[in-house]
Image (cartoon, rainbow, N blue to C red; front, side, top):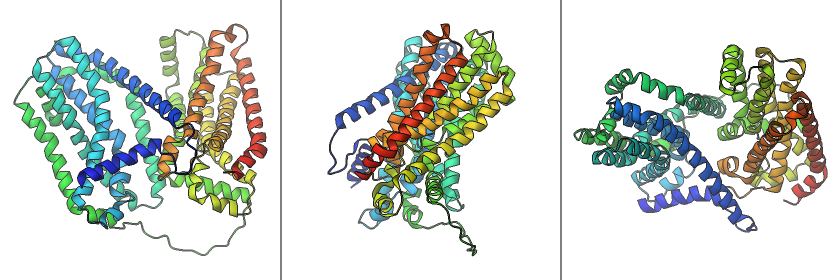
Length: 534
């Protein structure tokens, strides 16, 4: 029974990435798998390289100072944190609010088997995250210090046991998130905002990894004392990997006992957790006068409601706007310090480098706002309702493009103004900082809808698969990155000797405006015919 449930969970994960619907033409199946495999390999290689570089900075100095165990404890802390950040929001949807909970409970399947299958699926996912951290950490330490055999025993045990500790924490926090969200109004919006805040915090930690590594080297004794007193599981793991044999059973107890306790509690209360309706207080109905809205206004409101009502949609396709605003506030608060840092890092004495740096940052954030890319696919089984209503296709297209531009354009405009106020820019620079990111955002909104017409996906089981893994989203994001990289390389290696950056920037604005116009004309004719043929 348990083996079957685990196999089903793994098959659902595989289908989320590679599923093709029955009756659909099997075109591009192998190419899609190859592209996705290459994308994952590239991402994994980047993460392995980053972890390896940080470990290379830490391993030899800490080992020479007699704090090898602190290196291992820090690795264990990073493993648990990385696993937690990768799966904390999945616990809410995959354990406590999974769609098949009631279906499985209606079958002769014991709750303990359901819970065990969910936890094992989480463990397998966490083992992938663990390998990204522990493999380069172990290789770097082994090459630099030539440790004894207990080091390898400790790391093998850590690879299998640390994800248990992370899964335990994930289940507890996921249960709290589910409990709090279910008792609040607008819980989807609150969950989406929480995801964005969580992601921004992760970016902050990521950007300061080198500073933390230097602090670990410079203040190793102080940090070691804190870990010894307050982070006992990681202290035991560090000591076990450093050769202190009696810490091995302690480390095993720290990881296995909480995991078993959480499993027993979930298995015992799973039926109640999965079937209890903890809805928020009902909103009291108040009679109001009805207002007639135009077709475009009603469709736009519907699109915005879908975006803000689906946290994963908001998090995956509208993350660039909040990041841009946070960057603008950061620059407004610490403008002179950031200028000095950029001058020291890149050796630029004048202020001419400011506009290109600001535009690269803002345009990259604009690319991350691509709600139009999965918008047609999300109509899914309800596409016939859209066709049955007396709604023109151009009005539907307008709503999807306008919603994308509003979601991304408003925070981009605010961030541009913050940059313009905080930095010493000339008039042309201010105009470019405001106009170019908005044009990029409008172009992304049009191209997202265009790619969704080219690569629709209506055979989805979960909306998350469309938002996170559809071809239209990948084409929009990676195409946007190419759109950002090509002009930067072109100007940096060739055109900067011929024209000023201001002239080049205004030429880009004209090209983007022309591109938006051409796609708009296509959507009015060829796009309409393609949509009617879906």
